[in-house]
Image 1 (cartoon, rainbow, N blue to C red):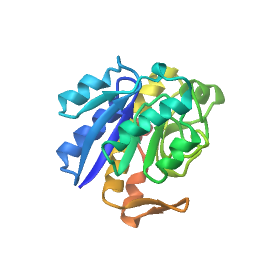
Image 2: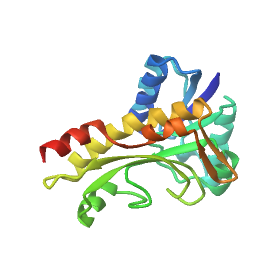
Image 3: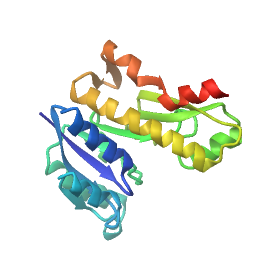
Length: 221
């Protein structure tokens, strides 16, 4: 049974989507801990309600990014996880940290990478006039939002969208996509070997998708 550690900074809605899917579908895995860099993260009590141990490694208590990352790695390694999942973890990680967990550290980003890496993705997508936006799950690399793409889910951009309304639809897509990817990793259908992404062919249809609600939206436009 694989062990998973999830890192959060806020409400942890993707964390909760993964927790629910793991329990509902009886994955051969266990979320052994949820760790936050913020003691007030709203996702911490949610994790505890699901019976998951929580821990805080407050970045403000450390002198510099490297010191924080070392303490965070110690907290993670205490659980000996097979996979570390970033779910709204709002810290840029050092190269040493990323290398330590190479091939078992994944993140979800609210855009169709490589477009709109970084912050304010929904506003930037609207300003650029794109017709499609979405979410990307990728392995984490030293380049921010630049690791190997595992899966993407697209949503249409509506003419009357605001960053908030577009963000809501993207978040719904994230909640559908991220558990699929984590389950694929648990089942050894997703691997990163020497920076080459290996995906089991049976997994492909679920990892390049138009979100279900998006498909319905298209029919009414």
